[in-house]
Image (cartoon, rainbow, N blue to C red; front, side):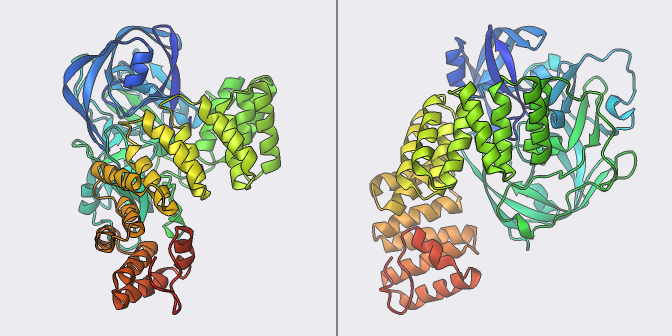
Length: 574
């Protein structure tokens, strides 16, 4: 697991290459930069691929020798499309995963491929003594039918009593329900208790707004979750209502029996849907299933010892990384410690344990581990990134810049490390450092799904610094062209307009942002100051009062972003 992404190293014409295991992809995909690096020669296809973020044009390349561990495959076709590249060259989809049965055991950091023989209608949840819950598999295509867009791993579920089609999608880091399906279940972004969850992206050039919303029930087979929270957004995919992402897989063990047309699953324990939002404290906490037999009750004892439990260092590293993805840092540290004991010269064990210890609020032990990892492997960019981000949070800027700049130099041209570093500097208010790293990443990623957010962030950084305002405006305009109904992007462009004293245009952008997301205190406060800059003091005062009612500390946030304080002695001009 790399974060919430299940990855595997495969052989491409003799070159070790990192891929994402993506059960939601009807076909395997490789990025254009990686295809060029590996010497593949794509040919144009008359078609497009659709996903979160829109559509993208397709090409096709053939890998003459492709290997997964001991499984050699010949003349395997990959679609060539933007959206992947960098450390992860592409995704392994259903044209490979669907040739047999496949088990997703992400909690142990493993995906297993099976060739079933003489299994008839047996319950294939072998790890659970045949008691795994059973679902009907609803994909409509078989592997020999080629590039069929309907070949997805799907089943039926219910949300608030409404039937929905769910796609089992390990390539999606977080589960998400389509807006239309949520509306059928009586939930919209305006439903009380719903909070903003930021942007999400996938294949395609656009990012989409998402929300975390309360739901009374989610039912999948015999598993029932009450009073939970689901992420909702515009999936942009025609044949499904919901993606069950890696968060779902980490809390379940799933066997896709293509041979039988069934899915078998058991519940591992812990949260089913991971929120990843700063706004989740007030959300409904119930996240564990309350199913009927044979699936376990939420308060049941942990399952018996796993027959596939790791026995070597690599296995403990895999399982420890899965614990990190579930934010179970204590057990992750235990597994990494066992991996180090079995292979003390492997820098990865120290790097992963160090990062887990930092996340577990053990800074001294974490830094000691990262130091040891870098002694063993000085060019370990993951260790440099973890240590540099810690130094940045501790305001040790010389050591932070040294580590983060070294990590950026080691990153692949189209990799995402530089983008992470830019975000670290932005969060720390080091705007020039953020701009420098956004510059490098944006130049190398002209068509990446994360491009709109990066353009917006660079626009915002320049606006806060009140520098290069023409370039800032260009960045915001480009971001909004890719994602036109994004409140955060409109808010950023409005700040540029304020810096340029284009009051009417600034107010119009704030109006549009607040129409999309009405209860954002900083946007209301900024619009109030813009109205005062225009000379509309009474209107401005009303917005500022409304903002202060939502957040009494909003003025402090405004000062951080370059707005003047509001008060009786203030001029009212930002």
